[in-house]
View 1 (cartoon, rainbow, N blue to C red):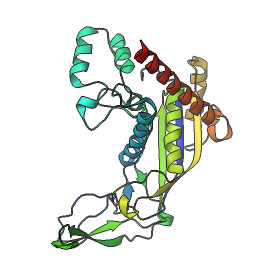
View 2 (cartoon, rainbow, N blue to C red):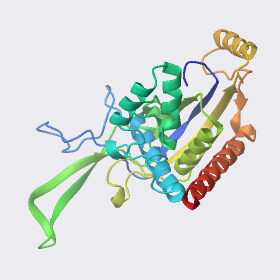
View 3 (cartoon, rainbow, N blue to C red):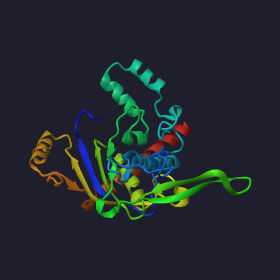
Length: 290
């Protein structure tokens, strides 16, 4: 799957906090300061881990797919529970015993991998979708966090429980973060799945971090650039791309790249996903009737 370069999608944009954001670094042991600080970089600036963004998108896409094709672990797995993975450790061990040839084993593992894991990765297959940690844009960050109070409620008295008052940090609304991601060697339907996930962030449908029931974590993604390269198994096209890559400046759009925002590729990928899911539903229906 990764042994031959086939295609590459580069995405850049801005993620803006619509409401305050809290991605906790865990309980602090500092004698002075917030009980629950947010994750920061080495300079003390707010940071959104790429894994947080990716995990929230993955969870949303899994819920969509379960609504379309049912709760079938072979198609939509549960990453949190091994027995609900599309391939458990025992099943992978059995496949290794049955297939001694590496290529045949790889093809068999890919064939049994659930839809989301094929794009986002799993313990047995690498991710095609890579998201960098989202770093804060300095011109939107004034160097201060907001401190908020929280309290645990006694369910019997419906009042504040003794000794349960705490405070936590949040990143203020209006703070912007740089978004950068790369997808390599993806199938068209996988790119369609990614477009659906990105659209959820673009329309403020996926919150991040903790305190979401309090209204925290609403974010909006704006994609600035979306560049696509497909060498179509053409060595000459790949050689041209490498030559352009070496002679270009960092950040330049290469002539080999297509601007997805100015083409029909996004719609084509989405249509490919819909057709792929419809075929799965038809095959599932045939299986039930036979």
